[in-house]
Each structure stands twice: as C-alpha cells, then as structure tokens.
Amino acid sequence: AQKITQTQPGMFVQEKEAVTLDCTYDTSDQSYGLFWYKQPSSGEMIFLIYQGSYDEQNATEGRYSLNFQKARKSANLVISASQLGDSAMYFCAMRDLNSGGSNYKLTFGKGTLLTVNP
Amino acid sequence: NAGVTQTPKFQVLKTGQSMTLQCAQDMNHEYMSWYRQDPGMGLRLIHYSVGAGITDQGEVPNGYNVSRSTTEDFPLRLLSAAPSQTSVYFCASSYRMRTEAFFGQGTRLTVV
Image (cartoon, rainbow over all chains, first blue to last red):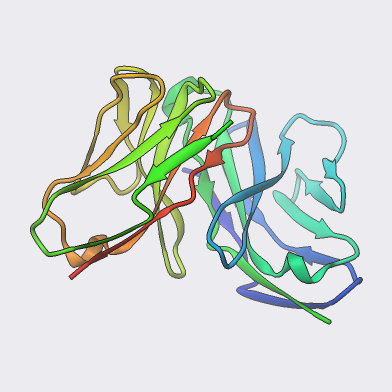
C-alpha cells in the first residue's frame, strides 16, 4: 500500500523568501509518479509539478521545483521567491505507474497550510 | 475548453435522502475518479473508472454508487445520505497515468 506523509501541518514564510514543504512516501513499487497540488481558500485543486520515479533530473516549473531524493523516499516542494498568492494548502500525492488502470488512484497526504507574510 | 465540470457546487440533504453529483469532462480523458475531502484527512478515493463501462471501488466506497456510460460523464450517487457523508467532493480526470489529474471545482455537501 502507498502512503504519503506531510509532517508540517502549517508553515510560515516571508514574502520573497524560499520555502520547502516536506513530503515523504512509502511504496513497494518501482515505477511511480509524484505530484504536488495547491488548494487556495477558494477550494479548487491546482496542479503544480510532477516527478516520475525514473526521471533523472528534478522537476522544475517556474518558481516550483521538486527536490526528489529517491533513496530517502522524499519529494519536497521548493517554492522560490514566495508571493502572497502562494498562501494555500499544498498536497503531495503519488500514483503507481506499473499496474495499469487498477492502480490509477492518487494517494494524497494530509496537506501543509502555507502562509506567506508581507 | 470547460475542463471538468461538477454540479451542484453546494447541496444540503436530509438524512436518508438520495442524490446524484454530476461530473462531466470534455477532454476525452479515459480515467475519471471521485474523491472526498474531510478536514485533516486529505483527499480519499471513493470510486474510479478507467473507461466507459468500467468502474471500481476506491478507499471509501460505502454508501456511494457510480456508473460510466460515456467517456464524458461520471456521476456519483448517494443512496441514502448520512451525516458522515458531509464533505467536499471532487471529481477528477486524467489522460494518462503519467499526467496530472484535472479536478472539478468541488461540491460542498452537508447532510443534516
């Protein structure tokens, strides 16, 4: 069974500073994908970044980067130059890529609430 | 391009009532799923579908039914609403396993 752990219920960061949101995962699968989503107070789920377990380089998308350490089973999200609009709940999720449709589901962590202070 | 559309956005039910949450996507995605989000619990999978005519149970399926008669639509039925089903419900779709899931805007359901 897959499990995602986000150990930081809440984080605070000053505007324009960088912040790292932690995510560790547990799986016996060799091929899997890791996702980060942002959920602002309005409630929608916004996809941020994806990392495959066999990707050689860490994923980056604009101000978002994923610090992927496979041996430690961690996939931390780094947000550079934080903005007030980054204040939101952030979810780490994973999906097994091996077994076709039967393992299609995303397993989510419980989330980290990020607050960006001016 | 509308993406994933969920209706209604808000709903209040009385215990024992039934209802259907609608979900439609216009991206020709094979994979669709329903999640519920409860405070402190993250998102948990209720049911999912890997194509028209194919559905399966997720982590918390009890009290819910689904069907997938077309690629576009994936309705979630509450058979007999209970207060424990008070939650925010999200429908999601994906093109492939390695691509992100697109989420609907959510349905906030309250069962009294």
